Image (cartoon, rainbow, N blue to C red):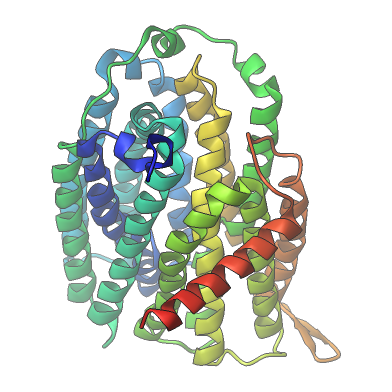
Length: 451
C-alpha cells in the first residue's frame, strides 16, 4: 500500500503553475533565436568583428544588472506584474527587430548600429522584468517539490531550445539572406507572444512580510559576506568566464577558419540542443539522490573535455569534421543541461527567506556582469591577437587556440570551486558517478525486459 509520505512531490505545486512549463518552452524558442546562434550569424553576415560578436553575446547578461535597483519595486508591483510588463514590451521589440534585415538600402555599419540598439532595448526590458522570475518560482514551489518541478521546467526549456535550433537550421540552410533572418526573427516574436499567453495563467503569489522587508534598504555587504552565498557567487562568476562567449566564438571559428556555412553551423549545433534536452530528464532524477554539487562537478568535467577538443581543432591537430564537431556539441549540450538544473536547485536552497529578492538580485547581477564582460573581453582579446600565429611542433598557436587553452585552465579552476559549495544534502563526486552509472544500467535493463 502506498503511504502519503511516498506520494510524489510535484502535486504539491499549484496546478496552474504548470503553465510555467509551456512558458519555458516558447520562451526558449524566443530567446534561443534572438540571443543565440542566429543573432551571431546575422551579426557576422553584416561584417561584425569579434568585438561586435562579443558585444552581441554580452548584451543580455549585462542588462541583468538592472535587477538590483528593481528589487525595491518588486514587492510593490508583485512578481506577476513585473514579468508581464517585461515580456509584453520585449515581444513588441522582437517584431521591430524582424523588420531590420529588410532595410537593405542602409549601409551595413548603420544596420549593425540599429541591431545593437534593438538588442540593447530588448535586454533592458528583459533585465528589469526577470528579477521577479526566480523569487516568484521559489515562493510558488514548495522546497520538497523543487527537484521534480525544475526537472519538468528544464525539460521544456531544453525542448524549446532544440526546437529553436531546428527551425533556425531549416530557415537558414540555403544561406543567410536578409529575408531569411527577417522570417526567423518574426518566428521568435510569435514564440514570445505565446510565452506571454502562458505566463498570464501562472498564479501570482502574495508577497509576505519577510519578503516585503527586502524592499527596504538592506546591508549589501552583509549579504555578500553570507558564506554559502559567497561561495556560490564566486563559483558562478568563474564559470561564466568559461562559458561567456564560448558558443559565439565557436561559431566565429567554424564560419571563418572552419569553412562552415550558416546552415552547417546550425546543423551541428543542433546536437548541443539534443544533448541538453536528453540529459535533463535523466539527471533530474539523479539530482535528488546525489545533490547539486556532484552534478556541477560532472558538468565542469564535460565542459573541460569539450573545450579540450576545441584546443586540438583550432591548433590543427584534429580536423573540424562534421561528425566530430557534432559529437562535441552533444557533450557540451549535456554539460549545459546538467549545470542549469543543478545550479538553479542549489541557488534556490542557498537564498534565505529574509531578503530573498535582494539575494537573488545580487546573485544574478554579479553572475550576469561576469557573463556579460567575458565575451567583450574575449572578443577584444581575439581581435588584438588578430592573424598573428606560429607553430610549436604540430601545435598551431593562433588566436583561437590560445583562447581555448585559457578556457580549459579556467574550467579546471571552476571544478575545484564546486567542492566548498554548501547544500542541504549530497554525495561525494565518485559516489554520484557510481549512482549515475547504476541508474543508467537499470533503465537499460528495464527497457530490454519491458519491450
